[in-house]
Length: 379
Image 1 (cartoon, rainbow, N blue to C red):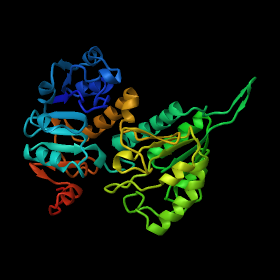
Image 2 (image 1 turned 135 degrees about the vertical axis):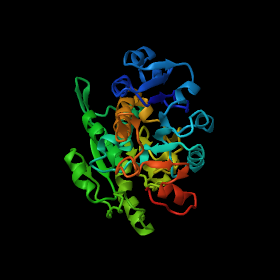
Image 3 (image 1 turned 45 degrees about the vertical axis):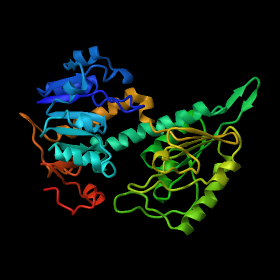
Image 4 (image 1 turned 90 degrees about the horizontal axis):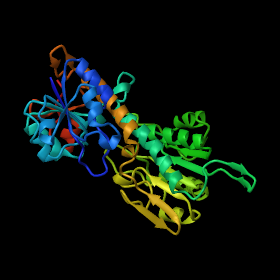
């Protein structure tokens, strides 16, 4: 069984899909692991460390993709897809409900594609849930970014020169990233308020020592995600949130709806009400933005208020993000492991739903729907 780990070439991507610990596990299974030279450098994992774990270091992308199984972070380019042998397996963040041209190219080459973002968010799949593990990292990184950009201390300081009050932080959206943001702000000593449209998140917010903003709430959809709200609810929501945003020194927004533009939570007039020196980190900037005026990958100054729209938060903590992601992949592909390598099992309740292409066909219902194709079953 040949396993390939290529160097990620997407701009700002510093993570790697395997680390020495996971390579050691793979070689312990009897697999031949090939790591492209330099693949782990940006995350702090050297070629020597991979070699010591049992990997063979290969010179280029062609050699790394020439495998029975390829593990990646970001989706491959068309040139990289052409390097993967027909009939091989490829796993990574493939954006399968949007990047349908890439998915079609994988199917055309008869590559079995595992999209980690399609792993079911169930108790059984927790160790394989890369979407959650990387959202955890992103929530932490967003808070550290806001604190680094702020002209204020996050925590209260009592000094001979006087007492400095703690910063006021606001987290909008209490999913995995939001909960980590709350916990990190609390560890830094800030006063934290948080809000989510889902009423059950109130208990989670308060369990972390933050205060829940009493704005309108509604129940989740069947998939466990927040639903898009109507105009009246959105208006009431923004009215209540405006007061808390105006008083905040640090704001992190995380609210996103799968398959739809991110909900607008902070309008331009509310940004204008904030005091100079305030910092907003809009984690949803790349999907439309929770904050009016945010731009993906850029910093925007609005009368002294800084709006950041980072698109590379997990990569800013590349070492530990890679450790977590590599373990997710190890557990995921391990679901299909046999004595001889891997046997694709579309009936597997975790890896099955995450399989987007198989046998030269696109089999994932959501991807097929996005492409205007008729639905098919996984089996």
